[in-house]
Length: 429
Ligand code: ATP
Ligand code: MG
Image 1 (cartoon, helix red, strand yellow):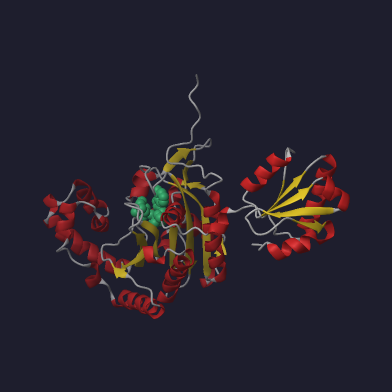
Image 2 (spheres, rainbow, N blue to C red):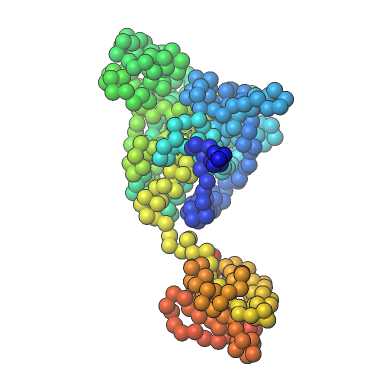
């Protein structure tokens, strides 16, 4: 027998019973972003491999071991995007929409691909909502990004479960001076470092700060501190951000070891973390990348952004049972018709009601069936009301209107009055 067909490990179907939560989450975020004046951009899922090497950095986990890279039929090396910032920068440069200092406040949503070890909260195809702002260099916009996510957590009812961690990486000059001091210190303790950190010491020393190895962590206790190397400009920027968060009342913890996985960050970096999801606790992460656009061939253009992981946030909503009950009900009204004549009348009636109530979620029974079987389907659909068309109703040109969730008796409503009646009893989204 042939092997049964399966999806690729770490790449998941999102089944109909799960999509209401996804749509609730995505709808809440996109409404919020609209309200703050952000505009959506959509980029391709596949890009030239070179784009990611140049932007993310050759010696990062993503580029070294996580990318899905292949040659296409022309022999070009292409990669399934592992994140959105690189393609977004490529797009704004290609279309010249950040030229002359034009401010762009952009967001995107979609799948990202990384060949990681699949586990709870970590997949090979996962989904992000990301956001990038170009040509604003002050801490006010960094603050806005954080304030906006804070509001989002509030709307979703998960504010108490997430914590904001903050750090400043300084400008590339101050980061360079710090890197030198760190390398000097770590080189003096080379033998006590784990193997991975010894390697990173040569390739990407700041990433050593991010280590999970206890021995290396012990060495880091007395290592030089990034905060002591910040130049005045970065220090003032960071203070500006903190004072704005204080003004709005957003709590944060300073985490001097927060360096982020990608090479391109400068000044502000932040993560929203939760302890409710086990090891995969970062639900949203981002920071400032003032040097990236220039590094990718554009004019110097400040940038700042973040990305949130939809799977992890959906998991968090489920774990905290913060899913509004009404989102899983997808039918308001279910129409049952008995006999051929009633079925035809029912179809026409349904269309007239839909003309008048375009947001009504009205499902018409398909596949005929007995009174009992249609009624069972109406109930199972989750509808609040059943509409009934049988011989008696046909004769009187009325429809039976029956509450399915225990609110009152069945009544007869004239066809002409049906839409008006439904408008009074169904709250339409
Ligand atoms: P992590 O430290 O968990 O590997 P990261 O620093 O690699 O995360 P980013 O590149 O900053 O992650 O991506 C932003 C967000 O996207 C993360 O905070 C997380 O919520 C989500 N994310 C990243 N990788 C995955 C993955 N493999 N599966 C599910 N979500 C992910
Ligand atoms: Mg990662």
